[in-house]
Length: 387
Image 1 (cartoon, rainbow, N blue to C red):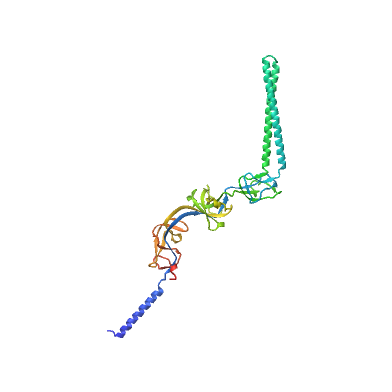
Image 2 (cartoon, one colour):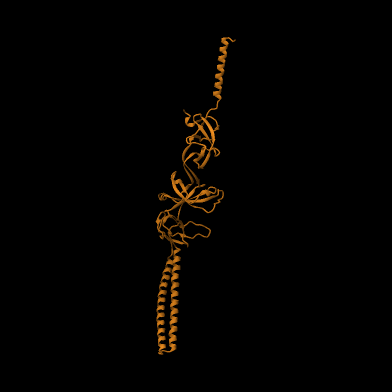
């Protein structure tokens, strides 16, 4: 039987060994990793499609106008920024020669019409005389030759009347031709709008664009009462878009503000531009008239077209998904991580709908790129780091 002193030494040695083993375990144990978490919650999840490149705000009507004939600018009654009405004169070339020709044609038309009336009056008189001669012939008061002469004169007078009327019609048509030539020297507004740009000054010479060689328009007219957005959508996304779907529009000029819109047209062909993805142009109209008053043609814009909406549904941040079907669930009581498979529904860049695998209020890890994150590891919430 060992001595009491020996027993005490053995007990002390065992205690020291246990303490050292405990310290070694504490020193070498894996420390909890820090993770960011979010709670599974109920909310709205939207499936959306966005443009691949910046879209452009366009006016519903925009006319880049130029005279159809060349000439020197003689009258420029408008300035850039002016509001004009349909039919208002915008620009006029020197046209005194055509104006004089029009005046001459109008006078010739008046003269021809007067001549036609005179010839037709004479024809009526000749016709009545021929009828009188026929009545006298029936009573044997004139010879048959006299009656024939009167009938021939009446026919000739009728022909002269018809010829004079035809000449008057030609003169009237010549007036129309001259008026058309005069219109070539004038630009008028085809609709109500605002003058966006004028390329030309008084006494400058303008020429129409040669075939295949575009030149700047003399006057750029914009209808600022109606705007729409055209944006390129990737060909793989356009199949789910239909006319009438709701859209949200953001403009660089207005920061984070969102404008309400609606899909009004989908292009009938795919645009295959060099060095770019194949896209389809989609047009979105603005819903609120008050928004239109603040827009300018040419603004750059982005659009989100809403394809599907799920309201009051379980959702998680999309960044929490791993491989599209798994999440890491954090248990605050045990401090452990559990990898769990879930079923998802509608999704976007921000949120993903959860149809099975999670319950409201559970905590999921959003920092899925943390080193060492795996099923069963110890973890600590970043918000608890200082506790």
